[in-house]
Length: 317
Image 1 (cartoon, rainbow, N blue to C red):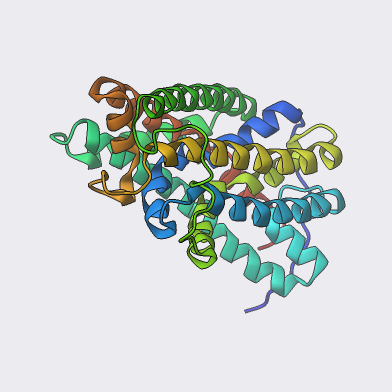
Image 2 (image 1 turned 30 degrees about the horizontal axis):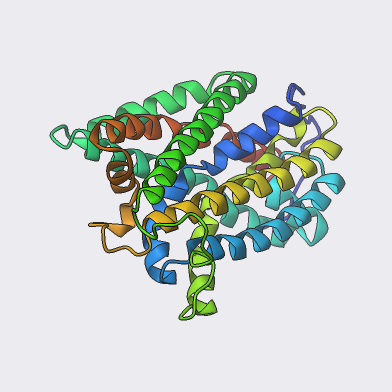
């Protein structure tokens, strides 16, 4: 099999319609800030109640990655992500391998989104076969993804704003609960970050799982050809997206860790979001939050993988 890349002489240019704020919002939509509730239980168990520190380790690693992406975007401002960078900076063979390997990320992301939506749906209406919901959601995501990128960007902006608002509401209830004596019983504590029996290795192990929460921030690089002044906007947007996401994760899990010092209250730590909603705010709020969480998985399932595949085909992968 030959891995030589033959450039397409009739290159198709994409229309530049995006600016800085919509790009950042799409990056945050790809990351889905509310995933912090899904991973909280399992990582809290692994780190013995030090999720914020594990997020700090993950954020440091991700920021270095974001800086690297920023430099490569300035040099190769095309919608190709890791494939284009490896192909042009190392060799076509390496680019071929990296391209097909990283494409798995874009194939798995919608699958993960559907899996999360399935978990939420089963928690809401266990009597209805989940496969029916999965088919309907996939059909909707596909139909919406066929619309213009600007429509997708506007949708993602609304979803991200609503996610941040919902996180703020949940944290408000968490703070109230801690103030009333739940969990640690105090809002000022170093325990979520470090304690006498803490160990670094479990936190690093937890950080490797929490890197999942940042999945998709690099998808911004696929928008280079549709962004105005991409060489300046995209690097800044990638770094800011990772930083904002990381700060949200650390801030939110600090208060969650105070409310849930350990995982003893969770029946299923691997799928902790429904239980967090139930314990913090009650059944009615849980139902509403899970319905919204189901909607939010649509945001990161749109646009990036389509642009990435188009770039691969155009460059001969």
